[in-house]
Structure formats: structure tokens, C-alpha cells
Length: 323
Image (cartoon, rainbow, N blue to C red):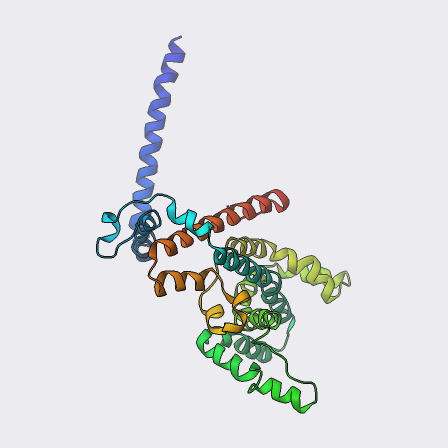
């Protein structure tokens, strides 16, 4: 009994000493690496001011917003805005188009950077590899307004350079921008051209972390390039691929505004109208801020569900995920 009493007294004392030691180490770490903490302070303030503080605006989705009364003084309407959204026929059309275009981007655009990175990794001529990387990166820095002008100059039915060449060869014109099917192909193709090169940066960085001794051992065993890619390179960048795939699945319900807005025209609105352009028309052009905010909130919730589901499935199937 006396021994148990002394042990009971020792445990709290040991816990208190451990907490004191942890606090001392923390203070010492902050004192030694204060420059790093100072650098971290800037992005933390950015996210706090521009990402978290504006979240109070989500309450607009539950109010009859009046810009003269402000967010807090506008009257509450509950879920009326969401009921109105789900009764709109156009909402289901833009939701379908958003999912379809994002799914095609996921199936076609997502593997493109991986393939490019694998090809660049196999190039042994240093100057050619650097030149190819530069050429592939450049489209990322061109705005979609300029890309849209280029697309119309090249693919327009009557004045486009491509259709002029096709006509000169006796093949007839192709309605790249006026037929819904061809418009979707053009939309996805321009997205691959603009983003694939930039996406290779992450995969090329991941490739540098693969142990070169594995390739040397494969050479000794007589493995060819394709075998080394399949058995060494792809497994080496598998965690990166999975994380980026999960993030892309999380964006299935959201879509950028510039690409569909610039490439769209009245002849293809059945496939080109997406959530972002719909929010622009409803929120900015029609000044229905409550409806626009409710659509944005719905979009965020659906995206969160996709993200959590993709991460859960990935953890179950591959034992890898974002967290």
C-alpha cells in the first residue's frame, strides 16, 4: 500500500515534469527558428483574412439579401433559396454539364501530365529535354481570353485556318465550335494543351525521389524501358498520382469560369452552360445574390462529399490517401 501511494504521487509529478519539458522545448524551438515561424505567419494571415473571414458571407444563402441593409440586417428566409434552386430546370442542366465536362477532364486531361512526365524522364539529351519542358510549360501562362481568340482564329467554321485547309484538301468543314459534340472535344483538347505541360512539374519532382539503384538493378536483370516504367517509375510516383486524383475528384462539382465562358457561344449553350457561368448570370447579371450564394454553397458541399468519398475509397483500396 505505501508503494502504491508513492507511485500514485510520482505519476502526476512525472506528467507535470513532461509538460514543463515540452513547453521548454517548444520555446527553444521558436527561439531558434523564429525566421521560419515569421515566414509561416504571412500565409497564415493571408488564409485567415481572404479565406476564412469571408466565410460569413455564406449566410447570404439563408437570407433575402439586400445590399443596402447588409448581410446581418437582411431578413432570414431559411432554405427557400435552395428549394427554388432545385425547382429550376436550368440548374439540373448546368449541373449535368459541369459533371460531364469535369469527368472528361478527369479521364483525358488527368493522365496527360503523367504520360508527358514519363516521356520527359526518358529523354537523355539534356538540352532537348529542357527545351521540350519550356515549350510544354508556356501555354499555362497564356490567359484563356487569348486562348479563346486563338481557338476562334484556328477552328471557326467559316474563317478558321484549320477549316480552310480542310476545304482546300476537299474534306469539307468541321463545326468545331458550333456542334455540341465537336465543341466538347475542342473544350477538352484546349484544356489538355493548356494544362498538361504545367502538371508535369509535380510528377517530374516526384520522379527525382526514386532510388536510381533500382534502375541499375533492373538493367542488370535485362529489363527494358517499358518494364522499368511499369515496375519502378509508376510505383514510385503512385502516392503523388493518388493524392492529385483525389483532389481532382473533389473538384468534380466545381469548374473554372474562364474556359467555358470564353469558348461558349449561343449555338452550344446546351453543353457549355456550367455552374460557374450560371452563377455569373444569376448573381451578377440578374443581381440575385441569394440564389448565387446558395448555388455556390451547394457546390462546395458536393465537392466536400466527393473529396471525402474518394479519400475513403483510396484508403480502403490502396491504403493511401490525403490523410
